[in-house]
Amino acid sequence: MSRPSPDTALERFTEDLKQRGVATKQLTLTRHFLRHLLTTMRDMPQDGASYRTASATTLRNFPEDPHFVALIRDFYPYWSGEAVSKPTSTPPPSLATGAHLDDILARMESDPWFQQTIAELERHLHHLKCLQRYAEDLARIGLEQANIDARVRLIKLLLFTIRDVPQNTDTYRAGVDKVLTFFPHQERWHTFVSLAREFFYFLAKDAGAAERIQQQISTHELRQLTAS
Image 1 (cartoon, rainbow, N blue to C red):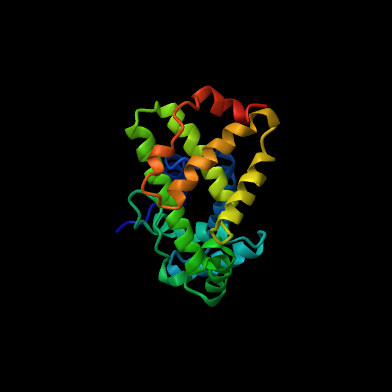
Image 2: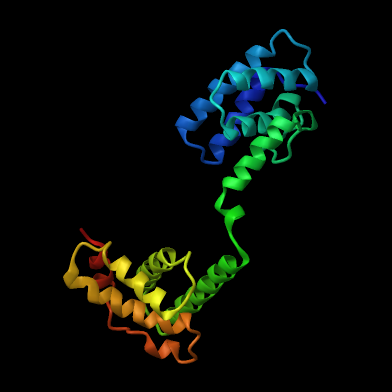
């Protein structure tokens, strides 16, 4: 397999990033970092060992950030000629060093995914299932899509607010009270209270929850709730 020139590899890599929707500012930073890497490698043998050495040197000249480690990993198949399209998610063997592993472990342990307990995951899954049933019943009774979207968005805000607390009537009520403080006009609060009241029956898995839906709440009322 032939190795492309460094400039060609860089162009292919950034073009794929661009097609994936990466922002222009991020592309500029990517080019800047990788050009430093390629410049460092200019007088080195073009092999994996040199890539690893140049990577370590380049990283020392930039702020410590897992993003730069990821760039080195993803750019390797383009530099070596192995990539044909999108950046790979598999790190090259030459980069599997202890320092890089420490970066990834630190990133993992700081991620909310790592912090979640089984109880939290089960609660979030329950919320999502109830929200899905709610949206399906809203559609089944014939509400317009704009109305459904507005209701679901507001209920998601409530679920986001109570995502980290055990589920019971008191925490639900406290969540409703907290969300109300986000809305600028107190005279419209009753709209959200009505919405939260109808969704509570879905959250409680009430068999007659659909009958609690208040169809008279208009799309205009829902939008006015968040209007400044």
